[in-house]
Length: 165
Image (cartoon, rainbow, N blue to C red):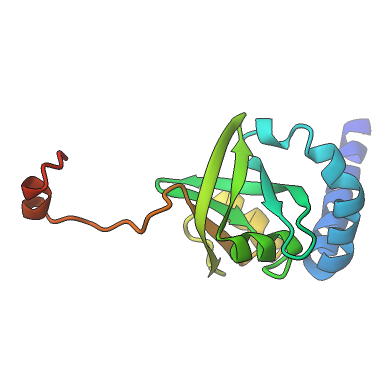
């Protein structure tokens, strides 16, 4: 009976949090900036699926460290914009053209930020897609590990330039 009550309490708490994040994003974001981010930033860079984005304020020039949900992609990272595309750190990264990201104790310099709107979230597993859907996260920040614009070389051009594949 105690286990059932604990499970019901946990589910009720999760539902309240989901509703708050989904419908009161700005209020929850303010709470996270003031309280949760200070705690989470101590361990977020060490956990899978999380990272710390370091960026410089557009107006203040101040250095900011923001914990985020991150997904590794072959050419970089995809960051879930759980509080939307208008968050200060997102605007800072886009204005600067990049940022630093630390995940699993590895630092990356990232470039070419692009905001991607994807309400289907098909690039994610079913579990991640469900959680992102519950909190209404439809926007993502795509960041590249490569500074230069990449171009695909045809086999003949690659051969002429001495590029091995």
